[in-house]
Image: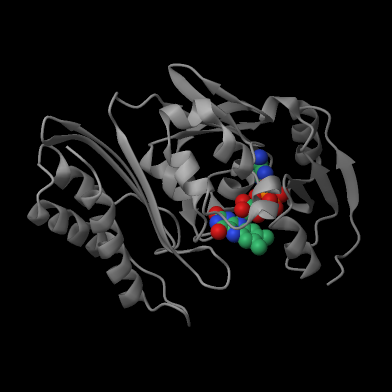
Length: 283
Ligand SMILES: Cc1cc2nc3c(=O)[nH]c(=O)nc-3n(C[C@H](O)[C@H](O)[C@H](O)COP(=O)(O)OP(=O)(O)OC[C@H]3O[C@@H](n4cnc5c(N)ncnc54)[C@H](O)[C@@H]3O)c2cc1C
């Protein structure tokens, strides 16, 4: 449980971090909260030559609420849980942060670290997919935005290039009256999602005007079941419509299997959790 030796540099700015990354992208790792990276180093699953500590980079901090909401990559789970201005607009951040791990992990782990790591069972990927967020990536060529749906490519694999930093998450202000739910079936040992479901839903009268759904834990990466979101548009939330949306979501999920949960069981959980989330919305 002792990492291989590495050099350590504390980055003083975003451009400093990018310049260091660019020197040797394959032999370098960024460290934010360190709650995934440090255990990975200790187990020697990674042995970078250089660790760049980005925790003091100001450009990666803070939550700004305007026409769009900008969340800096270094924002911790605890800060997302505690932020009243953010949760007045997007209460799903409190719903999800509240059930991520324990206070020690929440105090150090960052949303940027979680998204960049792309653990298939992490919570934030479902939330950013449901909110149709854009992820801001900054590298030597400048800044680009990638939709959350296009960001997650596979297990622990994202659209980040080796010399890019995930700098922020951008979310459009939701329609007035949008309701949010985050539900997860926790793995009893790790607390990660066996299946987690994030939903953002707005109703016009009794009909669904907008539905965003993000699912984590079930498949190799977070995804949106667009067959279900499209089906819901213009429909009322009757028992039959909820059941059909949940069935479509489950059908679209190409589920993983492990010794704790088979793919059939995960498919079943996607169906029941989507149905439970949708059933909790009020017209
Ligand atoms: C005991 C325990 C329980 C946990 N339970 C949960 C849980 O229930 N749900 C959940 O979602 N998570 C859980 N986590 C994960 C935790 O919440 C962190 O989100 C996660 O460790 C990654 O965030 P970090 O800031 O620690 O990233 P780090 O460990 O610092 O980095 C992780 C990876 O991302 C890269 N990286 C970090 N920041 C950036 C960036 N800005 N741009 C590009 N690359 C970057 C690093 O190079 C590294 O490869 C748990 C962790 C532990 C230790």
